[in-house]
Image 1 (cartoon, rainbow, N blue to C red):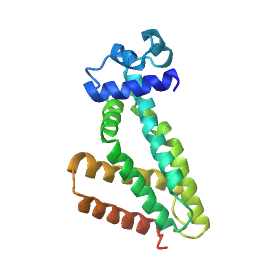
Image 2 (image 1 turned 120 degrees about the vertical axis):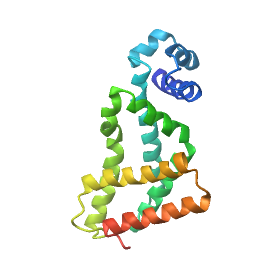
Image 3 (image 1 turned 180 degrees about the horizontal axis):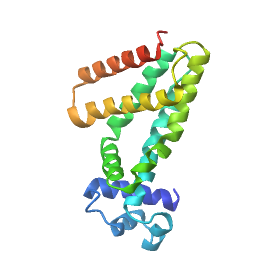
Length: 190
């Protein structure tokens, strides 16, 4: 793990332990095992780490869907994407809360679209293949729909795991309805 990655992981740990407001750069560098000056080679402040932390989460989602979404009907691929995002949101609840809290408190909230760009592109490619295979409605605007799709899935996953604290049966029901909603919107009945 290089120094930048160590700083990011240490920041995640310290922010999770202490909260963003109470965490200090000194605590982050101590946890990372680096000199304080080294921190400033990579980040200008503790809040400047937040976009890098958000990238960690986006990369986890991208790695998950890249490895688990296989060829097959678009409906099945959407189901896998929903499952992956739900699983990652559940596994990284505290990190998810941290990202939203940290980015919204800073000027870095404007970096959101840049951070999510690789994930959006992956979904756009999936939707484009669906259009070419005539598996989704031809009028679907893949650029807009990719963002709507990711935003919708993340929103429902966050709702069930971060706010509502639902039981397994209710979570399964939310996944099923979300899948129906998305596939109907795409015109993907296969």
